[in-house]
Image (tube, rainbow, N blue to C red; front, side):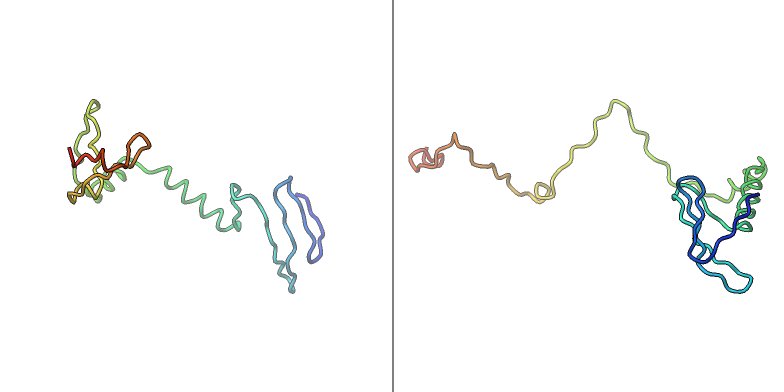
Length: 121
């Protein structure tokens, strides 16, 4: 075990990513600030021990425990089987479902002169 002496507002580095700062000292209590990447879990020792106990207990889950758990969980509604060769349903726009007509954009090849009006033919 490495033992270091630090005063308030001094820092200890662990590797390149973990920084431990002395935030406050009051009597026999020292407040630490820990700056570490989120991928590194930081817990108090008693919390860490409790997590390990729970994980060990969960890993020992037996088949009888699973059977009793399966009886308490109700299955949801059955899903329809999807055929592999089936095409997905066509998506219809909300306007089309209300009977709206499709508006076609004007192109430069079309003329806007009245003599070529399609309604006059």
